Amino acid sequence: MMDPLIVLAFLPAGLALNLTPGADMMFCLAQGLRGSARAGWAASAGVAVGVMAHVALAALGLGALVAAHPAAFDVIRWAGAAYLLWLAWKSLRTPLTGSEACILPPQQAAFQGLVVNLTNPKVILFVLALLPQFTNPTAPLAPQFLILGSLLAMGGFVINGLVGQFAARARSLLRPGARAERVLRGISATLFGGLAVRLVLSGRN
Image (cartoon, rainbow, N blue to C red; front, top):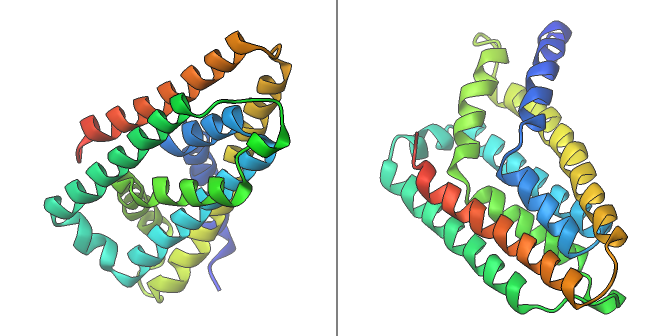
């Protein structure tokens, strides 16, 4: 068991990280705009699973190994950017209507959230930089990483899910019509495209 005081000290740091707007939050926002509150929450769940995958890699020591090889980071980064650009193009091409059949299925939103998180090498750097500060080096590190990572993932799930739900609510308030549809498609494509550009330009800095 971890020291409860260490866990309590980690909670504000994890909350601050989750509240900071980033790729995961913007992705859930875009999913809420394109789909529904369920899609936003599903995307957030996919992101949370991705965070736990990064934490597991860090606990096994593989995260530090990947971080030490810039070429591996570049491959992951460019793959993520390409996927986000594909989502941007698809957002522009896919019509939006008021019918339930056109709402993004939750399982698809969750899968997209997982892929976007896993192909963002910045996440593993955050995990490697943050979690060791709240661990006891004299105790096994893997269980501590998993406990702290679970708290980080759960906090992110709630916050990003609420962002997606807010976006879905804002979408429902728009007056239906061709103009509103074009606006939603444009906003979604811009968010996805902006995330792709940000990922490309960020590099390892």
